[in-house]
Image (tube, rainbow, N blue to C red; front, side):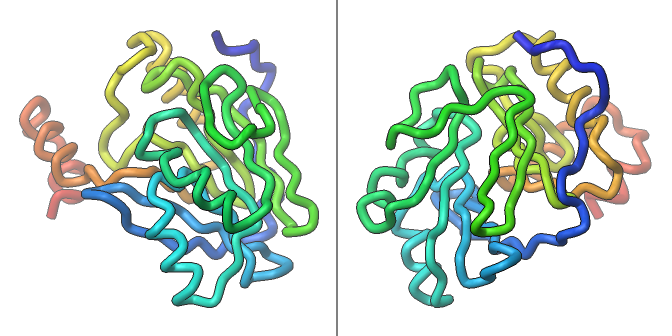
Length: 210
């Protein structure tokens, strides 16, 4: 269950604009590499389901892994964790109530992830629906929302309820309007096709589809 909120989520450390590198994995996954503001060659990987794709990018771009953030337990988001940890001794953070490999530091709603050495700071939001313990990381004008929110759509309900997903999406809609949103699948065209099937006169969806 969500903990009571007294205010909308704040976009922590918004003055620092992040450099974020996308890594393609599997058929349509995005793995995000967040560059440390203080050390741009060091990166934090978000939901590294495929270690080989991350390691290849690190090598090609001469980067070094500095940490791992996990939003939920599905294999395509955690499958590369143990292999990455065999190469890099770095901190890993993951949702408190889900089974995450690598002995992560457990986080839940209202916690702050402080990667002080890297100059990174994120607020943790509980956003169940896709899974029961799904979390997001908000900071630096950026939201890493896993499989809860996509371009023109939301995640499938595997463990949570429609009510939980509705509440989670309402929470995400309350973040500052200039927040950059980093989801972890490329479903835009499929989502827009569905949206235009059920709401064919939606001009915004039509424009986005074009």
